[in-house]
Image 1 (cartoon, helix red, strand yellow):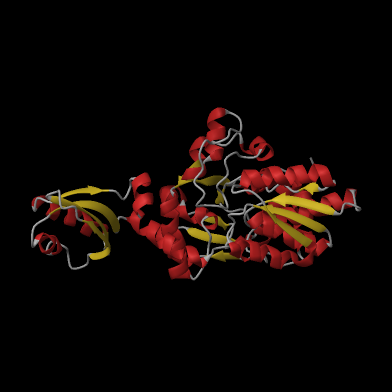
Image 2: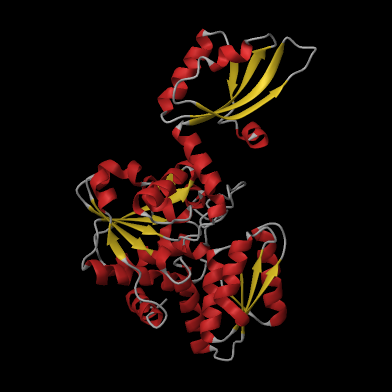
Length: 415
């Protein structure tokens, strides 16, 4: 493997005709909140709004140095990697064939097409990423294309390591702690390789989505394993199996250094950064910031760098993000109420609502053969304590109810 310090610097230099180094910004809001010197490396501000362009450009550069006649590049992706590859194909004037699941949001398909222009062909295949991946690899073998992995490729990892070179140029020193999001592991392993080679005394902390903790599973097993189930909400980091090459670098990580971020809590972080700072982050892009409360004691008084890995957020998802954030914060609850079928029963319930309690959902199914009817109710309020107090009043008033907010199967069906 090439010297990572040299290759990362080379990768950074190759990017300069395409875009300036992404900003490294001190964030006063987070610094004041946690009593630390917190900086954000804004990878959400690359031309494709994610760091993926780095690995794609570096991998194509390296291959074309060795095989300048290579004409076809292929990838499978439902998001940021597709956009990075599309941008790189247009830049190098090479044909790109990009496989995406049929279920990919139209916004992501349109952005990929915009970045690639006439240089790329998008093929929608299968309902899931694995199906698109299998089709892409089969096409590669048939057409003599070169497959560009999103993370399990040394050239891609070196491209992501260019972030480390930029950090040193911009900050002028190594931070005390770097907080890195982890999906397939390409970004985290690239940054780790760089700072280890630099000999800088940097503490690394890794953050995975709770529903896609492939690094944690691999550390426990001692090798990459495939998760049985993945929550796809954090689509930029929801990976069922960490890459073999990234894991070769990350395998000595202390499991305690890997933090898990609940998907619903990430929504709170996304909204906070949007409303307070005006920063638009996708779920994966918010991972590093979301972990700061878990690191509060460790980071106090230190220089901390959080990598915001992407900002490709479809605002059509905003209602879902707000819903999940409120449910995690305890300010929105869904419950099934058994309401007596008698005049005035509904009025009795309404009278115990607090002044800040708002009915956001109400569905009543009355069956004449029963003395009670089932009512699905959604309550929104300003403080979690209000819900607790409401449930106490409901119990004291003799109302029978069942909280279904955290019943994933039932809540998904009803809500």
